[in-house]
Length: 241
Image (cartoon, rainbow, N blue to C red; front, side, top):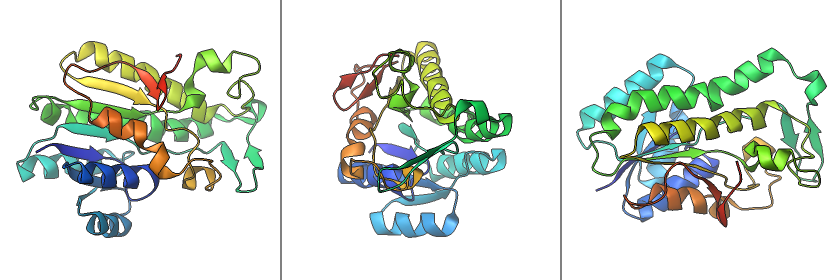
């Protein structure tokens, strides 16, 4: 039995990832900041609910204790929870993005609190459980906007994206992925880019469905013990850092 925890899983990519992994035989803990929505989603999917706010130390510590006391261990962690404060997309294709010259420290700080510090907080809390697994896996949900190579290449769509807080936070996620992978060679730890998927984070303006978006997440959540680690990829293969 493979036991998996997914953060931010009451909707969107996290919810669909939970559905797919349950269908593949995983026992899934559905992490959700909102207890009501989380319990409803878990009941719908046949998952186990755990209240988990990645920005709150007490919440994360309590979630780790809950899963440890259940006695089944933990094999896979999917760090999916994320926010985007400096860029929104409307279904009609229009964008409302905060340009870099209007970026504030508070905006970056709040973005990092979920996307970066939350990832570290959750990973740190669950590493003791994961280290007991025979084949521990961590999947960090990144973004194509994190690629410095693409952002610095004129003509690439990432180069033309004017906002900074969200892409910067996901670039930090990529570096954390590399450093964790080097430090934990028994783990398979990878960053993934789901693609521009229709979810609440972009007001459902993405051109992909969640079913398409989770392909790479599910693939890396089921990576073999001798599979890749320390990589950054989408459904089509490796991406440039």
